[in-house]
Length: 584
Image: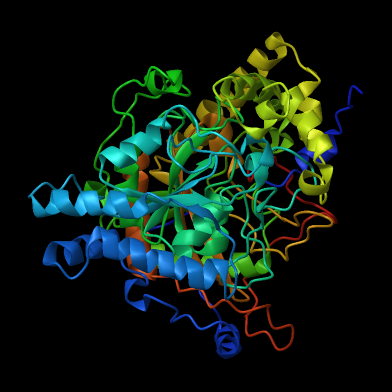
């Protein structure tokens, strides 16, 4: 280990290999030059492009904008870029009540009542987050289209209370990417395939694909996504936005269509760390939510530390004096040279900003984590129970109205009955496995205890404590692959699993590009360390400013790439690859 000092300044069988392979920035000059032949960025309402929440608030305070004008401008961009033009397909529907809500909030502002930093700010939500209004909540599936849920998800209600305008619902990987081994991230039965706004034939990653695309393409100020393992940070990586995956229990999952109560969490996507921090503060559960027991506990016994204002931790000098570790073993064996090049530049920027980099700072349990055995058991066991409990809260949806039981079994049969729409590209192997009751309660409990231990105290915490570190950093994920509805996703690596199984937080920040495709860096630490991670992430963002606007080009140039090779790494065994059930 070396320390770099800072400068002075039928009963299905379980195919484990298939499960472990489950899938869950700046343009180069060459790519930018191709934008002339692509859809023009200066579509309607160009004046709000890259505007921060603070800037939008200032405009509303000055009277040059209003909540209603912002709704109109974002709706115009959705029409021009999501429905037409490059047809990003990230927005499933626009809230028919958005204008009415905006006018009400404008009236409140005129009367001198501003609820907070989100007052009048348009925000979109992933389609697995309940809203008791005229929008659908269907996890992208035709089976849940029909009557709205009886009540808002807790996070949706908190956004309303904060004065946000719920502008619409975003497309996603159907059922949060927990249906098939061969899914294409960003595809749903309700709307089809999302498209990456940087290079349209590239995948946006899942499952919160639309939630990352929408703020990246300036279709909204910010958005809400969900993650079980990778599905906030991977789309953030692929679409050059900030994504905050909070500690499990920091935000309530009540009213969120589940995969796993042990790993699911809800968090924001935004163009800046400041905007993501502002949204995070509005949706945290500072007091227990009786609908979500996780809001009263901690994943591995780490003391709960929850704030309603995370913007107070923003610091452009946040890297100065920080001690940051790089876990190499079991992670960098699987990264690519283009990603390594961008990561090396990011590390150099951190050193120049005053951080001490400890390299390596390995996670002792990384081989056990990469095996994913415990996570496999936990997710398959909890999915059926958690989903059935959620489905019992829904009535008068297609599943119900067509006579199928509101259960996972009913969903499987609904999909078979609607195979031409729901199963035309990939099947439902994960549904089948989860419904088969392959594991006992005792096996689940043992696996959960083990994954919490190897991810948290014996994993991330051990690496932090060994070298007195503030956080760990890793490249977040592969550059976006070409979307392939026939064969499914083509990911290479991802680094979300240690934090996912521990229930710990991650923040992705854009760090650069690989052949014109955005790539991000992940800051992660112990449970409830969001405040510290936001300080570090905002410091990194301030010194790198790596995010660039999307260019909407059709495809990458295949000749004369301008990328320079990265620094050499030790060779890995032929065919070596990190398998992990991420992007859920």
